[in-house]
Every structure is written in C-alpha cells, then in structure tokens.
Image (cartoon, rainbow, N blue to C red):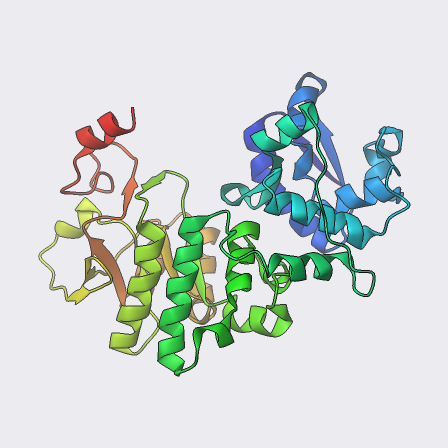
Length: 358
C-alpha cells in the first residue's frame, strides 16, 4: 500500500499530480493528514478529483470512500437519484458560472470561489439544461456553444483566437474548421490540462485533441515572475519564427545576464512584438514541441537522473543541434540572488515594478 502523508497546503499541492496519476492507473493509496490540519484539509477537499466527488454524491462505495470514511459524510449518496453524468455536468456548469474554479498553477485543482461561498450564504435558483436524449455533459456543452463571448479568461480566449487564426493561414483553411468559437470559449472556461480533458471540450473530441493538444509543451519553474503578455508573445512568436526557419524550436522566456558573459555570435529574429536572439544555454524554464520532447527524451531523462555540472548540461547539448531563442527584452524574471548571473534580466525597471505592485 502506498501511504501519502501531508501536513501543509504546499505538501497537498505537490502531491496532487502524484495522486491523480495513481488514480488514472487505478492504484489504491492511503491519504493521511495530521489531525491538527483537519480544517486545512477540509478547505482543500476539492483536491479529490471530480470523479471521486461524484462517487461520494451518488453513494458508490470503494476503497477510497472506506479509507476516508466518506460513507459517514452527510452528503454521501445524497444525489443517488441522478446519474454520474448529471453530477459531472453540475460540476462543469459550476465552473462556467464561476462558483468553483480550476487553478491551473496547481495542476488544475478545483476550488470554491468567493462567488461560490456567497452562494452558500445566500442561495438562489440556477437554470441548468438537461437533455434526456443525450447525456448531461453533452447537453450542457451544446448549451455552452450558444454563450457567445462568455469566456471567463478573456486573455486566454484572445490568445487561442490568435493562435487559431495563424494556424488557419498556414494550412489555408477557415479558422472555424480548426476550432469553433464555442470550443475556444469552453477552453477559456475549463483550462484543460491534458489530452483527456481537452477531448471533453465542446466540439473537440478525441481526434482533434490528439492532433492539436500535444503541440507545445511549456516547462515552468516556480521561482519566476512573468509579465502579462508573456504567453501571447511566446505563442505568436513561436508560430512566426518556427515558420521562418521551417523547423520546430526551443524558446526561453528569460533574457539571463549570463548569456552575455561570453563573446559568442548570435542571430537576431523578429517575433510578434519583440526581437529574439539565438542562444545555446537555458535553465529549466522553456517551451518546445512534443515532437522535440520525444526526440530528445534521453536528454531530459538524464537531466533528472543525476546532479550534473552545470545542472542543465544535457539540455544545453540539445541546443548544439536545435534552434533555441530568448526575447529582447525579457518576458519573465528569474527571482534569484540579485548578484547572480542567472538572475535579474537587464533593462528592467525593478523599482517601478515594485512601486506599481506595492
């Protein structure tokens, strides 16, 4: 038996992807939280994936419910008169209406929003669509397709539209053939973080999810500060520059000081709203394609197996064969020691940033 013992919020967040992977492989595990942190665990009960929440609501007994004495919960089997599909649809529609939200930074964990807590205090009727000819999820997806302009994340929605437009130009097809407007709205509401979740987006399905869902992979470390236009500039510039050089590339969002310590030649390229330069070193925050990830999988694996000097030794070996670029000026800031050559990017007004953000 695998035992997962946690006592802090950070530990819960770190273990979330492990728990999710175990669940996907149908491997039983014992989740233990220290008694003094019971209130903390209750606050993050939605770490349990939606499928387990649904199983509790419909009263389905299994190893998980027995381990956590879920059968003693007041809500156990409270919704057994409805199907699992119905309750999955309720969770989905609660996301759309902002009562709960998926925190993308913590592996898509569901949390109750401020609006959701207010709903508990003062409840009101919510109209939901149920079509008895189809399962509830598909019915609600169809309903969502009519909600033009209802994207919760407006910035992401615009990035998706821009990406769709650029790709449509490349293959000479109307943008709506790639993804409908309703699909983009659903993506900006649901934040799908894997192929399975993407396939559940309205109008996508398994075929499109596999075709488009594994295009770009972004490795992001936790000690970076990202400027607001970072994602838009990264994606738009990727499509532009990758098309220019006619090959898949690596992109680093940070203009590190150490990149200027050696007298090395570099090429300057025009991106979306910034110039980009070719580099031959990065840290562990970068974006590339699934194709290159598979091609150099041994390099990524070897980076994790041992403490190399430098740590990114096997990553940097890739850049002797592939294009890697970074922006001028930086889109992300590495928050390390102020005197470190791996730290603060040049030509950034840090005092202004500090003052504007209190």
